[in-house]
Length: 425
Image (cartoon, rainbow, N blue to C red; front, side, top):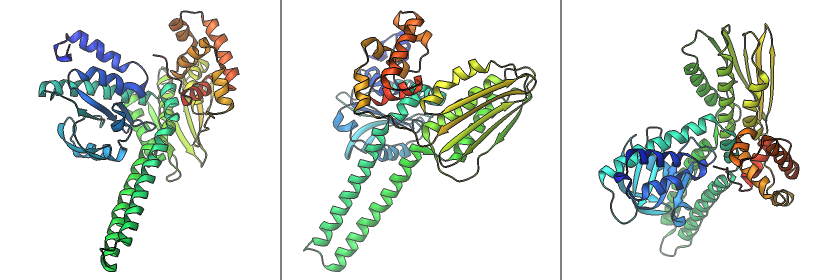
């Protein structure tokens, strides 16, 4: 039955299912929801919010495996927010008839139609549903859950693919220049002119692509902090609270995208917890950064009676997923302080040799538990999902950590994600 003919409650329930599950597979779930409404052979969702894996794809591998970020960015730049356009665009190396929709979140949907042409009413419904999906993606990224951070770290293949795209483009340019210079049909002047024009055009394109991929992979330190300032202003605007922001020095290296997201999420979580104190009047948020580490320091002037153990538990998985450390202290009469450090050069867990052997050594139940760790779940939730006691889950978590040779749940989640373990739904 087409989505248009379904009852509204069924439509909403099915759209909820699209939002449930690993973020990396959301295009596959949305493609299934859309296909009866707007038949298509391939679908791509492109968002700058996901620094690790900006492309979510479904469908024909000959298209989705070859579509480049530069191509998607060109399509995005052609559209206005909320626009639906059926037109010819270059996708996966050649011109194709596609349907493109740009959401107000700046998230792009592109699909290659198949068979029957979708009606305007059907595309309006797709646009509305895509708005929900795009918002869901943004919310998951902004909360910087351990599962999202682990997925971002596991997205090195996406970045390697980017390098391959640039290398291939460079090779084609050099081959074209060489063929021009060897041509017997061109005199020296014409050959030099043609070669120069080819090289100039390729160099401009290459620089633009490098800038775009760098923008997707990292954030400038001052830009990331400015975004945090705006988010915190909105968070405390209804309270009489002195928000003191100590900005990092201008310049320096950029932050990996997943570190920037996690640092903002940690600061928001800490400020939200601290602002619940009735007697708190001031909160101070400071970022400092050197060539290897980002330090996030949040402190207040409250009564110092916050349960820092519980607050640390809520924040720790996000920190440990990225190899960071967290310290917390609360002193009655003096206030509370949360200090977090994030390494900028993220440790990459080995995915061959001993690491793969360790993963292969996990028992079936331990694999199930690891899937839930990749999803960022706590022991109590895992126990409920698996129908076992919390002590049984603790036993299996200990076994997972021992066999993988790691010391924290976050490290186990990151290693599992990089080795291809999918987050349990």
